[in-house]
Image 1: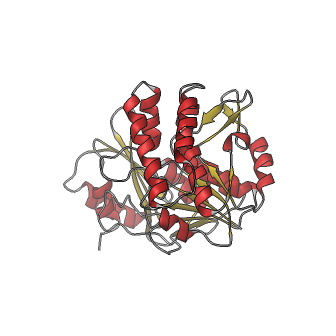
Image 2 (image 1 turned 135 degrees about the vertical axis):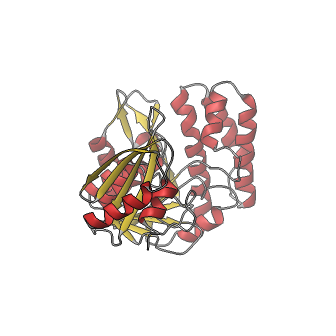
Image 3 (image 1 turned 90 degrees about the horizontal axis):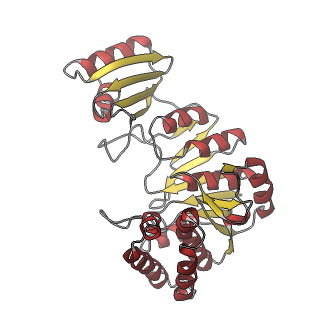
Amino acid sequence: MIVAKFGGTATAPNNVKYLQKCLGKHHGVVVVSAIGREFDGDEKVTDLLGRYWHGDDNAWTRIADKFRRLCLINAVDVDVEELLADAKMRARKFGSDYCLSLGEELTARCIAKLTGREYVEAQGYVVFDGGKFKLKETLRRLKELGGNRVVMGGFYGGTIDGNRQTFTRGGGDVSGALCAAACNATLYENVTDVDGVFVANPRLVDGAQKLDGLSYDEMLLLANSGASVLHPDAVEICRKYNVPIAVKSFWKNDFGTLVSNCIGCGDVLGVTCKRSMDGTYAATVLHNLSAKDVALRMWALCDGYYGITHVECDGRVVRMQSEDDVTNEVYRAFVLRN
């Protein structure tokens, strides 16, 4: 049985048709994010809900428009006006986390109707207590879902006192991983708008190479170092319960990148760059190079670029501090070097 989590781009009104094509007879639990950006300059539903919570009534108009178009374009058999009216009534009543969770709830309700699956409310399955996430109780409850064909909103759960609490941004990945672990899934598909895990962020580096596979530990290192394709907690959960992860695109019928116990192949597996609190940048390279090859690449990197202030080599990992985002410079030196 496969558990699939679809990101916000996949649940956008014009992309839901691709989401449907991704689902097959082996898919059990489906976790969805709230509708994401539909074009450059657009805002995610979650961000619009944040604005609405802080008093911007116009934000609700845009939220409602997105869900109306989702239902109209995809012929979703649901009374969308009733859904929206009910959600709006609750949006400012129970706290900011509750308000932010409504994007996932509404999206999940619509996708469940569209795909002929049962909607299940995440508030009753993902458990928080005293501001802390409760793993064991969550897994116990989610196990009840088994291999049932259901749809659940990601990103949030319920508190012991009956309210809702959200994960940090990207927490939908965590919701999907929890379902996969609890239901003993053979695979956790994290379906997004990129083709898999790349050596560097393909939005920053033209021609960045896609990886066929990585180990859990390798993916976790990259995720904690700035690679945003997977939430680190999702990787931790899948590693602990030995559930392979396929990071793939909803655009293509392609396996993407497999994250499992198998170590990744290739000279360089990852180049990331993350901004620190003090405004500097921490760059990380994960590699399978010899010490000599690392030294040659560092020489090539520093020849003509003087913004790197500190370098630390530890086994297969090179860490650098720099004044600027050096993703492209590091990629050229480590990956494109002849």
